[in-house]
Image 1 (cartoon, rainbow, N blue to C red):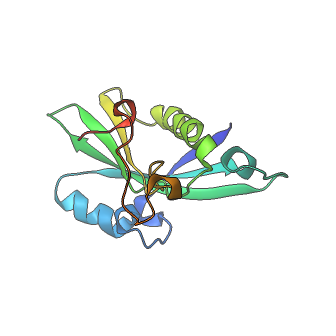
Image 2 (cartoon, rainbow, N blue to C red):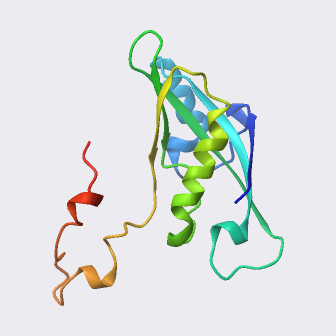
Length: 147
């Protein structure tokens, strides 16, 4: 998987209905002491989606926010970004490649990279509900996330 990433001005972020990925939201957070940075990225559609051939690409962007934990260390945070949702089989490799590509653009005092993705849950499939629409069970403990 090859992903190209390029820094850009936050004001140049693409228009989106996801407010947390807008330059407006970046400005709001900046007033609360939370800086941000924007990035364009480009990736082959065949690396994102199953059964896609040819040489078509997806070009998109995202905004990263920097939540400081103390005077020097921070967590880089992508609220509801990036907006694209790869095929389930490609989601892990996409996030890994995106994280590795982003690493060189973040200072050494970035302790973690957090994604809050706007993706369909792996435990929200039709088979996970009974005939009355009641959720059958939590995912196995190995896969649960706790905040």
